[in-house]
Length: 233
Ligand SMILES: Nc1ncnc2c1ncn2[C@@H]1O[C@H](COP(=O)(O)OP(=O)(O)OP(=O)(O)O)[C@@H](O)[C@H]1O
Ligand SMILES: [Mg+2]
Image 1 (tube, helix red, strand yellow):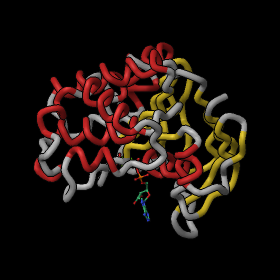
Image 2 (cartoon, rainbow, N blue to C red):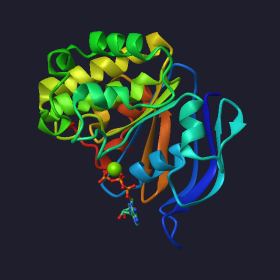
Image 3 (cartoon, protein in one colour):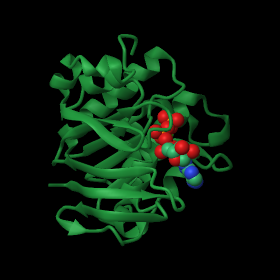
């Protein structure tokens, strides 16, 4: 199993923000984590990266227990991360943002291949990231995370605040990742759309997994509506 989370609880201070989470992501799988605002989705993503100050339970990457190992090591061992906020350096240009990523092999070639994958960035290499549109910025954040050739990418709300056409574009990119051998751990509020391209899903409520299973079953599950997801997304 690429990622296994076992009995994971933790938070920023004394109180647990996430509780008793069990979750798995297999090789080349797309897994969606959904839930209302404040449910603990970003907190769980941070735990996967090693950015949560306090936790109990275990997080294994490719069978190795990394629960007490720093983010740097996790990234050098195949983990990519697009945080929900502050996911690019605004004061650097597009090209500089790609150049400063660590743990990159064959950097120039990798940059070229990212520009092929994200053509929106091609004509903007010298533009400061702070001046990019929301969609372009998200593309750059995505490209940055892909620079180190991760086997598992953690995406925290990749479509937040994007127009519908861009949302579809991002989901199209995500859908392609397994074909390149990349598995996806994706936090999304657009649960229905996200589940439609996912293998599995986990619904969080107040820091706990309240519903999980194959994406197709979740989409058909009546409890999804009760858990806020409704018909709108
Ligand atoms: N750095 C922090 N220090 C203390 N509490 C925090 C911190 N970050 C988040 N929290 C709290 O943890 C809870 C869960 O937050 P989290 O960001 O994980 O939710 P979320 O599911 O990602 O929500 P959203 O959909 O709004 O992004 C919230 O009550 C939040 O206030
Ligand atoms: Mg969040």
